[in-house]
Amino acid sequence: MRCSYCGEETGTKEYKCKKCARVKSREAYRSNPEKFRERKREFKKNNPEKQREYDTRARRKLKSDVIGAYGGVCTCCGEKEMDFLCIDHVDNNGSQHRKLLGTGNTFYFRLRKDGYPNTNEFRLQVLCYNCNNSKKIRGVCIHNN
Image (cartoon, rainbow, N blue to C red; front, side, top):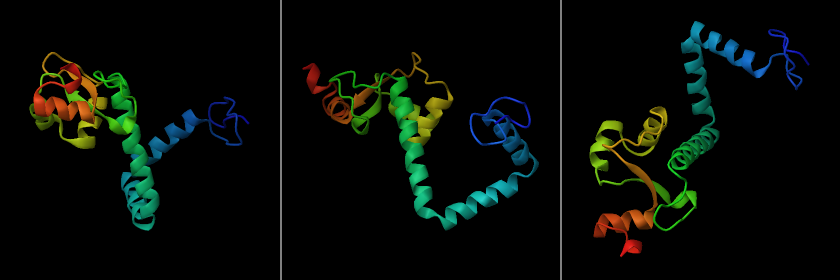
């Protein structure tokens, strides 16, 4: 089927291609954002389980994106399991960085929004939780002893 707006082939039974649908959706949102916010509030209230699923999926994707951008594997031991990986500050100045950006998902979100920076001031790497805790306790990971 062809898109009724731009004439492109949609590849589905839809009368709008994804690009035009996105543009139309943005236009509708901009004309009445409160209507969309109210719909979202209603959905969250009426579908808490689905909303929890959406939120969990979004958090996992966010973490996966950030970890992947910094290598996706523990720089010390080579662990690849996403549930075990986290972002570590090479120079142990994470406290200062988190004060600027926030903690948890906010921290990951801001890293993604800022284009995954790795500046001289805040150098980042991926470590698994074991290596990260070992570095915290001993000053250096136990694998490097």
